[in-house]
Figure 1 (cartoon, rainbow, N blue to C red):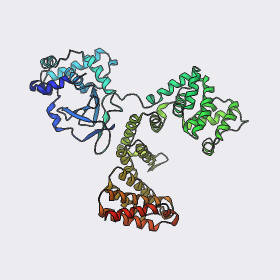
Figure 2 (cartoon, helix red, strand yellow):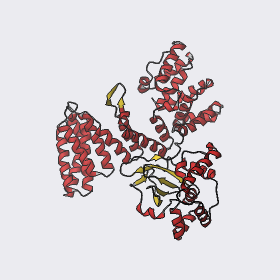
Figure 3 (cartoon, rainbow, N blue to C red):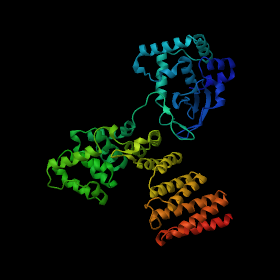
Figure 4 (spheres, rainbow, N blue to C red):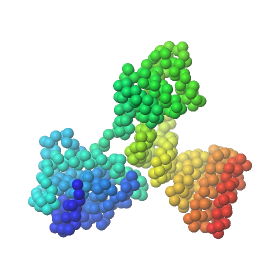
Length: 508
């Protein structure tokens, strides 16, 4: 569809006023922008074209789709173009109250809901003559509420992952308007399920191609985890043999478990061979029965691992399983959005980090894991968001210094040089007044070298940014740290220290 109707509204004041009232699509409100600065998680452009009297805003995205954001922190795609959106708001002026409905609810329920809403509107002002006039002027056909609702539903389902809206300052995601869409594991497993079906049909080309491709092999094994069939033993053996090329992966352990659950003692030599692939695999498959064990012993071993690490419900898997597999398949935006919502959940409720065995303490590793995931995705704003919270929650001096050092590196890479300098100052404070003995040997270990190295790298960045006073101050601090390091720790960064000092002399 085109945006011809939008052009007509901009040319004809009467039509623009009708769209603004009673249909609450007000072009004049575009000049005021949204209630807060926002951006798309995907980095795509947004153009504000209209607003409504509740503080909501209509944005046009790069492909022409219209994203509606309300003033309460929820957003969703409501049309594939501005014209389609205008058809919606004119044909269903109460559309915000219908986002929970689906065509599956049936025509009778939909029409009753629309009639109730529009009767309430008519108690205060007219919509029928105004709707007829706008439709005629804009060239819109008369469409049934059921058809318009179907369009709205389809549009809302396209919101994720490409059109997720973020608060530009805080980085948190807007809630999703309308249906939640399928869980992440469904699109992630789709290709694996297809490959598993081909393997079961005996497609020898698929047997070769899937086994040789590490990503397809992983996804297929995950599909087999949740769709277990009696006739799969041979294909599981085949995938297990090939998965050893990736060393100790979760999928290798899974393949061994799925084979072991069959209780065929003839597989014990194969399992032993797999276990002895390398040191990591030997450790990861420890406790495996040796050749000569009984079928019951083999099954008990496999069942224990299955119950503790795998199982048959995709929803029971940690979200990191699905985000890792999504990234492996190139579903980058899908993984990013899921990780952002995971981080949002932790920000909203830090009790999620409490250790079950020690409720008064927090397990903060998920935050550092999120920071690494975002960094690998190239999303430094979200990596910084996760790392800042992670650093703020650390208790020991060692953990504070380590977390702040990583934060300083991310801030430097994001061009946030003053913030990086503040983070390194916090690192130096931890070294000077630790409050515990966790840092008593920092001068002899890699942490000390890493801290000194980051001081020099930030000094170089400050010099390149033309900040001479801060450059000199940080170089002094860097040299002081270098002077405290052991000979072995210092040797690895002397060349960097000399290069940094020369650069500072050039700046001066």
